Image: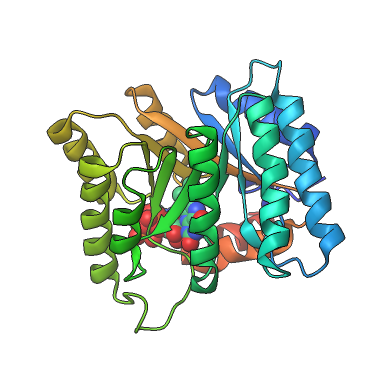
Length: 279
Ligand code: FAD
């Protein structure tokens, strides 16, 4: 069982707990993106096992009334081993999604993985007619050019600010510059992207901007937020008619994910310390 403090951010250690989390979250009006925790695999069998776990998860979701998709990490499927290993394993997961009428999101990791991730997305998105989504990071200077390249690719694009520390020559590092890039990238997506747009942020200013763009360009969009972050806002947005997806990680490899969430915000750290101290 997960420590209670961890279960704010992680949906459980195994698929049964994750599916139960999906059921409870769907009941609150939110849909779920399930991420089976794992990254930076250096052994082929581990990457293959994770691909198999996603295949089983997609099969388990099929035939239920649960509203959930999956979100995978490239290095979980073998990108750090070799690009061909990642492509082989991703192909398995995408084939399972197609067979079970689901969608695979591909998370974006650090800048060394961007080209391989976008190439894989483009291939599978075109091949499946859009049953694949990818995440793009507004902090990377290259993202405007990448969006231009992807404008006519079917599928889905999630825009986030970017979670990885990158050097100044490839990334905006000042918060205001990242926010400005986020707005520009988002407007491009609303204006030019043929597929579905997902706004991956907890930032009220960006969410308000997305609403303005939706009105200006007359199109709909998804909101995506992390489990445990602004939970009440997630419910409020869903109740006001937004299409809200909660990114919910699960699996035994939760410690590194949990400590990342705790480190990134002082308030999460005090929440964790209070919970551990039992106050
Ligand atoms: P910020 O400006 O960081 O935060 C805005 C406000 O949101 C804060 O003031 C606070 O009120 C609240 N908030 C934000 N984070 C937290 C937190 N952890 N705890 C409590 N409150 C918080 N990054 C990648 O690089 N690759 C990915 O594939 C990726 N996938 C993502 C998928 C989803 C669904 C989401 C929501 C984020 C993803 N990210 C990914 C992370 C993203 O890049 C940002 O690091 C993260 O979302 C924080 O940025 P923000 O847009 O929420 O805005």
